[in-house]
Structure formats: C-alpha cells, structure tokens
Image (cartoon, each protein chain N blue to C red):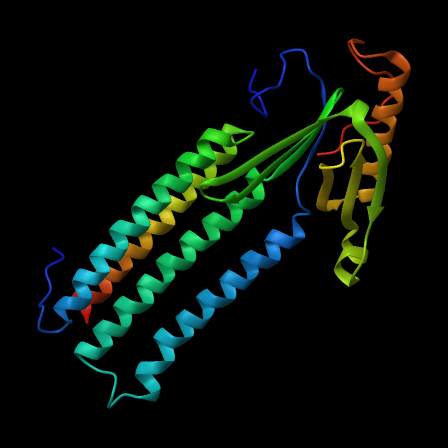
Length: 70
Length: 188
C-alpha cells in the first residue's frame, strides 16, 4: 500500500526520516509518561495525549501519502 | 485523593494552585503555529516558484524534510505545554510549594513553611502584564537561602493578599488548627 520507489526519493533521506520518526516517537512517549505521572488532573493528560497521538500519526501518514503520490 | 505534591498530607487544605498566566504559553504556541505556517508556505510555494529545480526526487526530498519539520514542531508544542502545565506553585494552609519543570528530566520542588514568610511583594511590569493583569509575586522568607518567586502569575495583587491572609490566620490560630477561617475563595 505504501510502497514507493527509492529511485524517486533519496534512500539515505528515507533512512534518516525513519530514524527521526522513531526518535521523536520515543521522545513523545517519554514526555507523555512524565505528563501522566505528574499531572494534577489525569483527564488533561489523557486529552493532550490523544490529541498529540492523532496529530502525530496524521503527519506521519501524510508524509507517507506524499511520498507515494509524488 | 490525588496528591499535588509528594509530601502533601491527607488533611492538608490547598488554597492556591497557581501557574503562569495562560497568555504566555498561548503566545509561545502561536509562535510554533507561525513556524508551522512557514513550513506550509514552503511546501506550497517552493515547487511553484522553482519548478525547474524542485521536481521529481528533489520534490519528494523536500516533502520529507518538511514533514520531519512538522513532527519536530509538534513535539516542541507538546513540550511547551508540559513545561507550562507541570510548573506549578501551591499554597496550602501550612506551606508553599514551588514545582519547577524546567526540562523533561529536570524537575525541582522547593517548599517553605508559611511561618517562615517575612514579606510578600507583587510586581507587574510591561504592556502585556498590565493589559492581562499578571506579574511576579516574591515571598521573602526568614531563611537567607530561599526566596519564593511566583513568576508571571495572574492577579498578583490577589495572590499576595491571599498569602498574607493565610499567614495571618496561621499566626493567629496556631500550627495545628484544622482550617483557617475567613479566607478568600481560592484562585486557580
């Protein structure tokens, strides 16, 4: 579904992209864990986490979509 | 009952939970949104302004770089919110607690007993501070090392008054009085 030709995109850049996405995902998880652990109201932490996760996944999907359609 | 700080007692009454005035994190988030718009504009205009240079593989590369930029901005916005939300000052019937979340792995919790309060001053300066009514409240203590500064809190005058009221009640009613009386409604 998300297959794309490495001829059209620098393969090095794709690898860098994957590394950065993994790094940002881990950083986000750490940040959200700290938020959950110390938040005064768990509902605020939950809302922010859901919102963040949706936006993060959306941007990743859009980037994959952009790669497959270009 | 959920505790706001580690050493909070079960019967300890909390009168103030103060954070930075929301206008400041809102402005920071607005700045991040501005950076997002710049990325959006770059994604839209660069291929149209330079069609002969940016096409094919370069266009894909550009798209990838801009999406990495968006993810970075998103994480930046999350961190801004976390630093705002987790940095909090708490005033209870017997002490003041300053929780400073200065980084992901940097959290400092300072507390002083109400009885050590010596002087409370509020200060508001600048156009934004005057318009939105926020400023610093400095609590000087008998300890030479610790001075509490509540930075950029909303309604600094009222915060100062509440701290002084709690101090007065505390002095008048003594250490183990279960609850000070005639205190104003807590601000949040």
